[in-house]
Length: 193
Image (cartoon, rainbow, N blue to C red):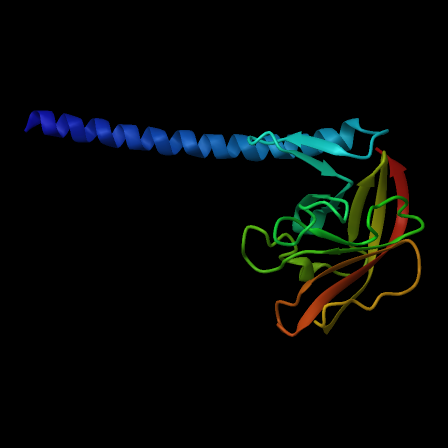
């Protein structure tokens, strides 16, 4: 009986150790991704792509970084033709095909709301007028301010103004499943980082 008790105790200790190691590995991976984005923002003033090595050795190439402090979001933006530019994997660049000059473009980005792992625009509805949104591109930090927040029918396209210096964010409305939430922002300031 004493041997069985010892085996059970050793098995419990082993399982707890495995759980702890897995949790630490997960935390390490999350910190690594956050550090890679921070390094991009701090260290890349002349390049416009970020390469992050993943465990699978795949290379992710970001065209820009979107940051929304109020909802604690910081995500890379792929060029439109990249296979990872998809709301089922990331936030999705709808327009233009590739960010080249935020001062002369109307940028549209979509993302999922809800509660899944890919719901990067969850809580987008808490944004209010004058909240800041940042776009990091080619050594510059573009600060946008929310100028309008509205819902429109979900019909597969978005009505946008024919102006430059605008950034639109859109996601499904969490209140009405037949509508999409639209956050319209205007370029407010540009600084280097």
